[in-house]
Amino acid sequence: MKDRIVILGGHGKVALLATPKFKEAGFEVDNIIRKPEQVTEIKRVGGNPVLLDIEQAGEAEMAEAFRDAAAVVFSAGAGGGNPERTHAVDHEAAVRSMAAAEQAGVKRYVMVSYSTSDIDPERVPESHSFFPYVRAKNEADQHLRSTTLDYTILGPGKLTLEPGSGKITLADESGRIDGRDPEGKEGDTSRDNVAAVMVQVIKENAAVGQKINFYDGTTPIAEALG
Image (cartoon, rainbow, N blue to C red; front, top):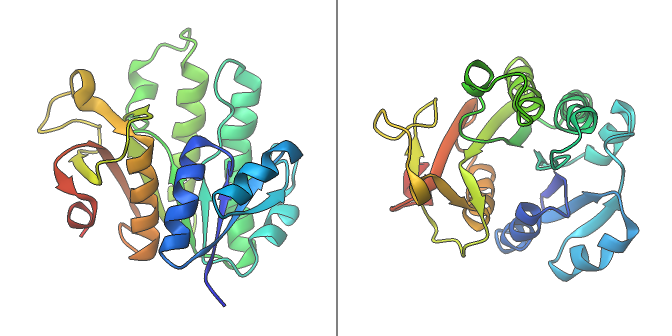
């Protein structure tokens, strides 16, 4: 039986790009979705659609969906705009999924975050519309670090729909390159590259216990993560 990956936010743009890459790497993929109309597209990219609203699902229900999986990937998000829903999905559902993974005995867990999540609570004003997302992601990342899971946190920059180059530039813990903030497109990250990094860290069991901040760049992903 092939190893199985469970992706929460299974109909998101990154998940839809990652699913065929996981399949090519020899994994089966359960894509957690909340709308029946998303089933067709999940099947089109080779995933197994699993209907489960993570905003409402409890820890035990999530654990049942995770049981016997090789890894859980949290790639879900409320999409901003509604602070209450942002907290419910990006923080509360994320934390429940971590506890559910532990309950199900799944050690490997990958969180899709963003490059400056560790420093933004100190530099984004609470009055800013972006702050609820900043706080939700930061607190979810911090909680993940406190678990017993073999976690990796992915920290891409501004997400784009550009074709993936398969090459990235690693940034420091503050999302900076050589001590400076990236400028313009230098801080962009193709969703396709995020998907490729996601597959690489699970396939090679790389970057366990780490957060990887990265942008589109010049170093092949396997080499950058080696």
